[in-house]
Length: 166
Image (tube, rainbow, N blue to C red; front, side, top):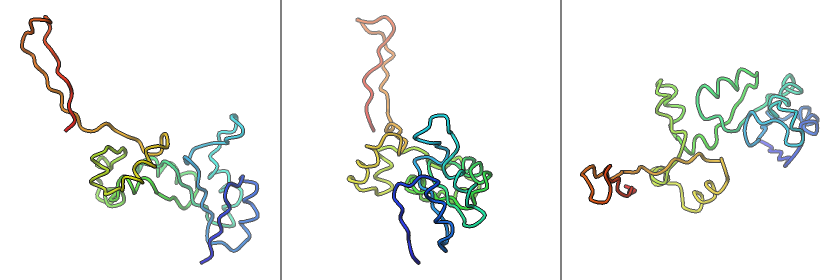
């Protein structure tokens, strides 16, 4: 199999690739639904735009922040025949199995530091992923609040103690 890596190409520059006997075009963008980064008025998904222009000649694969089965189904409704799940499978390695089992509500869509350990994500990779704003949605570590509801000589309404990570 030959792999063509075009780097940063605009959709019009991709058109000639449709006639190059490739198996498919993988349109990798930050988010499936992102529009043009050059024209704020053009909000058409780049993957959808390419599919509309060349999808009759070559299958197009879309990708980007499709975290839930509903989001995947909405993307498939655009006519794009192939979708890739990248970070979603890093966050939830059993994504497909949970969908097949009807357990969509159990799909992890955010990560915490505890998840890093459970998923065995190396520290360097974790730092890289979490340094990119929005690339991996974070949730705070599980927090236990120590609450003291006994009267305080300093406060009339009780005292909420310091939160501690568990």
